[in-house]
Length: 226
Image (tube, rainbow, N blue to C red; front, side, top):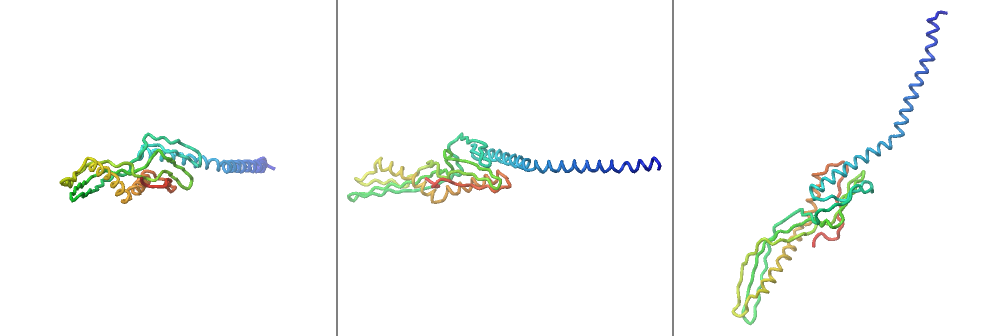
């Protein structure tokens, strides 16, 4: 038998051996990749949630000038930091009037005032504000919006009429002036200004934060207004 034939027969076992080694190496690599897949997936998911946490932190700093407490899968990621105690979302001009008409012994006095106020609605940040980032949703928990302030801008005297002996006193004027801010608060509450502030904040956050998970705001206080 020739040397070339013997060489041809001898190469087949070697080829099968190499092929077996290659298949074994592929099986081992696939096994290791599958074994480490859950850990790699978890690490990638955590990294993505942490990125969302940083984005939400930036959004709240831009919108509300504060850093809320942020948790990721029930683990605290960032603690709350509040440089200001209130967040004003909406301001509205409110006009109210009130009249005093008093008669005594046939003598009447009359005072009628018209006042313009700026009413501010927003959130009391001294209460709990937290963001919980989950794999299926993002929950922002904060108190209901409320009326934060009523600022007087202008007072017009529409009527100031003294009776002959029933004169207008300083207390009469002071009482009338003290009634006007409460009327402005009531008018602002009736116009649903706090609810509009909640809707405005939700819109701002949705415009600022873009995530795959739905963003849900949960309001926790019992009342919306003072």
